[in-house]
Length: 136
Image (cartoon, rainbow, N blue to C red):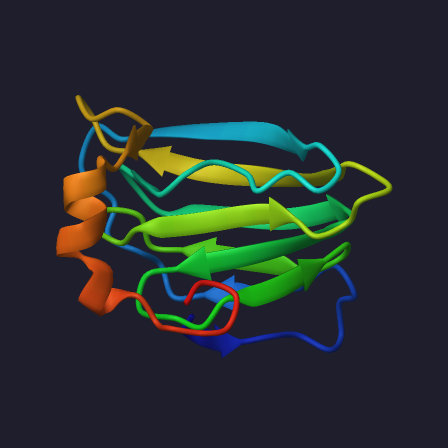
């Protein structure tokens, strides 16, 4: 994640990121995602464009290709570039409550908002995944 700045004068600023490339004709989408207690979340996938998210409740184990898995808690924001970068997991680390987050996504024209990887592509890209105890 490349954070280019943050504000200490406005308590609403939790993440500021350099503007991503936005393909002409892209559409914006906002959604609330709810992950049940202890659920591992969606399987490995990619998004057609960049995603900004804000955790409303719970704790999420978030893993992007090429990065160490990271925990995001209520009140924290995350970013993913979309495109070719694989999103391996967004698991609910809480077993007692749903984890919820809001996402704003830019969806490239003519490309599905979310595409799941098949087993062969996951294997082909395994060298790009950062190995840690949680995914080894």
